[in-house]
Image 1 (cartoon, rainbow, N blue to C red):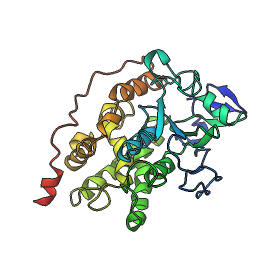
Image 2 (image 1 turned 30 degrees about the vertical axis):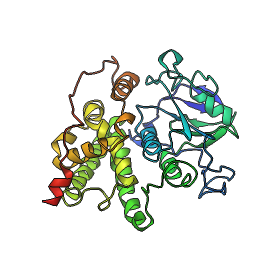
Image 3 (image 1 turned 180 degrees about the horizontal axis):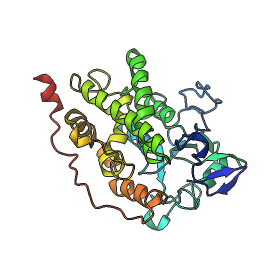
Length: 327
């Protein structure tokens, strides 16, 4: 994972020396919003009106943050309105690459690597080059590279223009959704990285302890309700899901998050299966890319690049959540 400095690429890993071995994620740099009429959103500038065919997603099937946007694109029925390209799973010296020979090409500009998209938008860009990227084909620039905000654009901006009116961020539930999001982001979504990318024992133990404390709380919460916020699926569930679906295949071993597996939590495991089985979601899960990326790209953690065969996990097994909570 490198970065651009004044538009020049540098192959540089995260520096944890100044933070006592703690992994600290940088904030996203592009924070504009697609809105129904093109008016400015809560951050950034205006001029990004919701229009079918205008926007394009760059994603990695391996990345949990990008995975969120693929799920929302599918659930909101926006496949025809928003095009998508995926990078190759192997993040190497030049960052995320495209591999046309493996049908992983940049269909817009034939870029070789993702950082060329960033400099196309801003020639002197400085910062990490991450996925997802929501691209405006009309203005030829990045709208946003912040996944939590992109999924809200997909949820609401295109209603009446494309897709459907399914609502994953209902106004009445927003305070509770925000509360859960804050907990899950800091200790679970980013928590697995705090454990996995830690370079001191103290930083690792700090991250992994907070992670499993939250998983225990979520297990208890899901004993009494079907979803994180009441009786309907919200964005909070999908934000958690992309970490849960990667947990046992990757985070338990690769990131040393091994106090428990998700399959050891009866409620969390059934909940994960239920979300996986929502129509359209399974097609967004590419376990080959997920496992190959983590085990094959993080040379400081897994120098051999060997990818394990297991574990064998059946996400399609009956989840029984409806019956369990009705009893």
